[in-house]
Amino acid sequence: MTNRKKRLAIFASGSGSNAEKIIEYFKGNQNVHIEAIYSNRKKAKVLERAEKHKIPSITFNKSHFLEDTQSIIDDLKSKKIDLIVLAGFLLLIPESLIDAFPQKIINIHPSLLPKHGGKGMFGSNVHQSVSESGDTESGITVHFVNKEFDKGRIISQIKCVIKEHDDPQNIASKVLAIEHQYYPMIIDQLLENKYYEGS
Ligand code: GAR
Image (cartoon, rainbow, N blue to C red; front, side):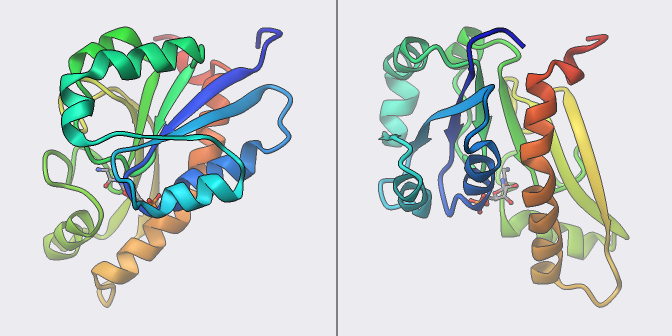
């Protein structure tokens, strides 16, 4: 860990319960600071959560994000962001943003990738797919972001058991509980360089 604090940007499109867990986990941390929340939805609940914790927020629409990505890159660079954390951010990250932050963008996916991943696989769609598959386990995958949905190098996976009577909603709440418990910790360990070893 260098002397200066590591600076995080969180990207979220919806409720932001994971974003809030990350904010709470790093509150008062000597080594890590959450610089801002970025969202493509002006009415997303994550923006209320950001305000509650006095974290600045930046919003943009889909076309701004995809066609004027450079202005977002410039903003992130001006804030000297060390790690971009996707927490329920549902737009594909443009190549220029990935190239500007190589191995510095991570995502959480609510299944054990490569199962139940890819375009259109988000939120309840994922848990529906797990339920229909008859899988006896699900869980979370934290991975680096590359140019395809859910295909970047896996950093960590945590599993939970799926019982026969579990419906998509039960599966969703089991998985969300694991996300809340582990995502902040995995980010912390990543910032300590743990997952870069041997890479
Ligand atoms: C989380 O379950 C996250 O894994 C999922 O969206 C949810 C966001 O919840 N992400 C994806 O499905 C990405 N493909 P939150 O807004 O309450 O943190």
